[in-house]
Length: 130
Image 1 (cartoon, helix red, strand yellow):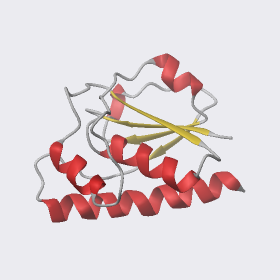
Image 2: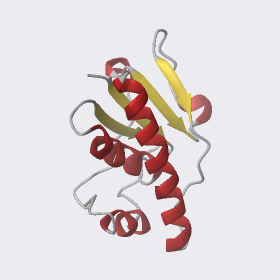
Image 3: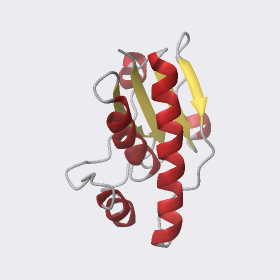
Image 4: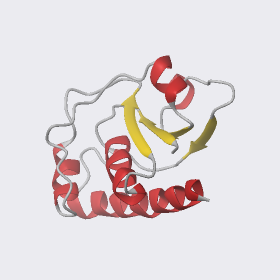
């Protein structure tokens, strides 16, 4: 079982969607956490809305700060726009996904980001299975 940490700036959009969609795609074969370098107060409402459309409820999720401990526990760290603020832990596999921040986007654009994340996490889960 691999443990994946998804990291973005505020842990209120991309990383929350990624962790939830990865958990669904991995179906208990792997686990996921998410964190942000500068966590927001809550998950973006537009993100919660488009995730509800696919049957995922993020209303109980709270953005959390990225710590070295979280990064050390991960086998794979997927970064999305946190740049140099993301810690580098030797021996960890890092993947950087260039995805736009969905904050303030119209619903259709947030859906596009969600769908791209869903595609990427499905590929990652499949890769980790082999």
